[in-house]
Structures are given as structure tokens and as C-alpha cells.
Image 1 (cartoon, helix red, strand yellow):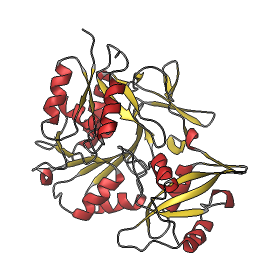
Image 2: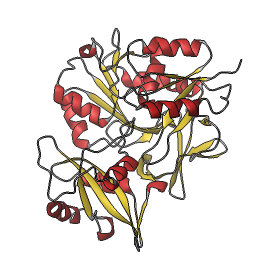
Image 3: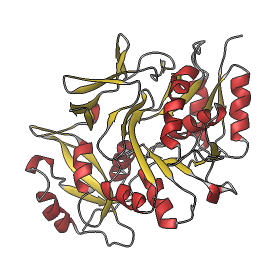
Image 4: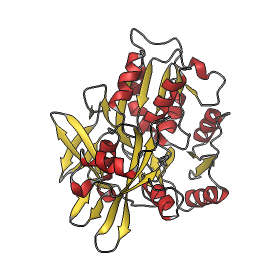
Length: 374
């Protein structure tokens, strides 16, 4: 009998046992998010049953990137297992291994970030601690997004935390410094659902993950590694392959072994005669005083293609800056073509993995669900 994708609820209770049972039956687990509406659950189940599953598939995750339609990414068991040893070494506490490591996983299990750590646990990795677990305070390791690390530091309720493995989106330098001042070693990484781990940053820039090879071709990052996914259920998607190399279309530079990712080519905003990469503007906006996070989007506009706009999430307790103040601050960071022309109040919507969800931000703006900064 051929294997099938089994869609599981995202409730933490007994999830690891359910994953183990599905894998033991030779099937492929795909974990959903309990916050999804019923129509979304129906769509995912229909998609999962719509195509035959390759025999080598062992895990399935959903990806919508930051702006696209969700797709099911399939990967073999080996594509994650081959990275377990390197990840275990990263998570090991300074001075020796813990008697029993417990890894806090704040992101939903529908995120490939969390699902990887659950698969690692089945392969002998740290015991997972989901957000509603009674032993949350016993966590020694965190695997999550920058937003999760910030929340943990603010709560101050993890006295045994020693290491944080951070992915999903940009890690501010100030957040790393704050964590390390509290005795938490921070390892951030760049990756993708299709690529898995690509590069690590322990404080001196992102460098190739052990076993991964990186190349820049015509401005785009290409990766060759044993961690690559099989592809999408049902056939080709946005990922491209050339032999055993794969690219998801991220624009990047590689200098002296340090990788800098600038964002997806297909997320670029064409405004008048300029091309604006949202990730670059977002990174600059996060450096402005009083701004915790931002998402940049293109508002379709006759004559120029799109108008650059930004949704701003203020620092906790800070007032929302006025549009005039934001324009003035942006003028100190960006050329004229890259400055947002319209400003909206957050909070910033996010994908399952913690990245700014530009498609959802645009929908909210166009639906009038967010307020413009005065």
C-alpha cells in the first residue's frame, strides 16, 4: 500500500506520540494549526489527498512564504536526520551536556521550525516542551523566532535557559546582546522549508551550515546540501533546481564566507523606475527609535506600478509615531525611491514561521482593517 499524508491537529497533548504512530505506519504527517478556520482545514485536507505521495517522503510541511499560496513541501527522513548531529552540538550547554535537555517550542507545530525539533526528539534530540506544558519552566533550550526570544526574556520565567536557536526572521543585534547578557547563548540561522538549514550566525555573520555549500548566481542564492526537500506535492513550484543545487529565489551576497540575504526576488516592489526589496527596507525601519518591527508592502498604483507602504509595530509601551515623524526618520535611512510613502499601525501579521506576512498585511490594508498613521 502506498503512503499517504495524514493531517494532524496541532494540539500539544500527545502530539509526539501521534507523530511517532504515523511514521511507524509508513505514512507522512502534516501538522495543522488549531487556530485555522474550518474552511482552511478542509482546504489543507483536500490538498493533501489530491496527489500521490512519493515513496521516499517522510515529513510534510505547509509553506506560504511571505506572500504566496500555501503549498505542501515534502521531505525524506534523511534530509532532517543528517542535520541532527550538528544541531545537537549547537544546542549542547557550555561546559557539558545536560542530563536531559528540554527544548521550548513556542511556534505552532504547523511551522516547519517546530516540526523539525519534534522530528529531532523522535530521533533522540531534546525533549520538546510546548507552550502549554506543565514543565515549561524546566526548558534548557529554546527553538523559535526572534519574537519568541524577546517574549521569553521579557517574562523572565525560564531560569534554566542556556541556549537559543533562532530562525524564522531577522534577529536584531540588540536582542542577541540582551540574551547573552543574561547568560543565554544565541545561535541564529537562515533557512527555508524547502532548504532546511543553510547558514548559522553565532555572532560574526551567517556562515554555511555544516555540510551545506553556497553559491551566488546572478544575485540569487543557490544551495547544495544533504538537507534539501524533495519538492512540492503535485509537482513544480517556485523552487528551482539545477542538478543537485536548489534555489528559492532569495537575493543574497557572499563575501569572505559571510552570507547576507536581501529577500525574495519575487517579493520585490516595482515603483516608478526603482526596484525595492522589502526585507532591506524592513531591516532599516527596525533600527529607528521606538519601532519594534515593520512590514513593507507595495500598494498597486496606476502609473508607477506600486507605492511603497509600511506597517509599523511600536516598541511595547511606546506611542505610535506620527506619519510626519516616520517620514523624517526614514529620510535619514533610505534614498527617495525606497522611503515608504504611506504608514499604517501594526501589529505586524506573521506566517507560521514568524516571518512578516506581506500578503496578509496588504489584505488588511486594502480591506481597511488597519489605521493609517496620522
